Image (cartoon, helix red, strand yellow):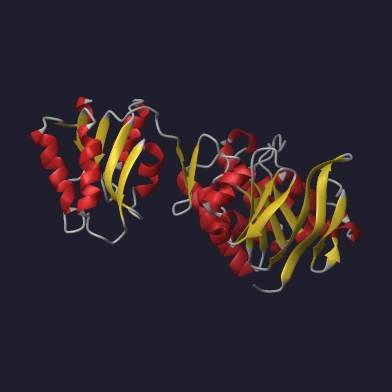
Amino acid sequence: MSDTAIAAEGLAVGYGKVTVAGGISFTVGRGEVLTLIGPNGAGKSTVLRSIAAQLPILSGAVYIGGEDISTMRERELSRRISLVLTERLIAERMTCADVVETGRYPYTGRLGILTAEDRRAVAEAMELAGVTDLAESGFGEISDGQRQCVMLARAIAQQPRVMLLDEPTSFLDIDRKLRLLTLLRELARQKNIAVIQSLHELDLAQRFSDRVLCISGRRAELIGTPEEIFTEENIGRIYGLEHGSFHSAYCTVEPAAVTGEPQVFVIGGAGAGIPVYRALYRKDIPFAAGVIHEGDIEYPAASSLACGLVTERAFEPIGEEALSRALAVMERCGKVVCACERFGEMNRRNLLLRDKAAELGKLTTLAEL
């Protein structure tokens, strides 16, 4: 990590004398992306607002370039920090270009007259954020997602050392989410900006963060790399998961299995069974699955959604013992769905399962259930 851009020491934030989140300490280097995660109401937005000096800090301190923000004048702080919030900006009769231009006000004189350099910064920011074509559109006439991108352009035009973003992916479709987060990483690297953002999408936080700060239970729980933070144990504890499970490999969650004796046995593997598992879950049909290799792409879904699961060790051909267990479970089920279309050396015995199901008259299709 390069030299420190922003640091917090023993930070406690809240409203009045009520602490929303405390015990917060971190450093973010130039070119680094730090993401805040945690349950709703944990205080992520309050932390960002306090760092931006929109709310008074209850205790502790925030330093930018080694200087305490409490000693900075408003204009100087505005040159160093930009803040993008999800709440609507009141901008009646302003075009999108007008809104982006307000990001240059920390650099203009009292009359707010933009220089040629200011206008170049605005044009570049709008191009980077992909909103150049909205320049003359009324800010109040565009979609929420477009407004979010315009506000990002405003923050870029501000040319800060530190960029703070509260749920920047809100209102955006999938492609725009990816584009925005990719852009933030590029900005951090190319312009040496420290980025601190809050995200609800754990999969995106895992993929686009250098480090992750977890806030839960009115305090900072953990800080570390995505590999350190996104484990089943950590996420289960931070979010108090009770209605499903979290799987670290893909940073996804699955609901709990439908309870009861399995009515259907699914022969799966290599991802082929996942659509079947989800369809059976939606139909409230308890099912068993096998033989699935540990580490298979569909293992997380099968281990969560199936009320019975027969597995084999990763990288090992399905053995006699696993086959016997699968046959015993399958024979107790009324129907069998074979999701696999291809069989190789590793899953050859699943073909025996399919043939046995056909012999017993249990083989069916998902559409027939």
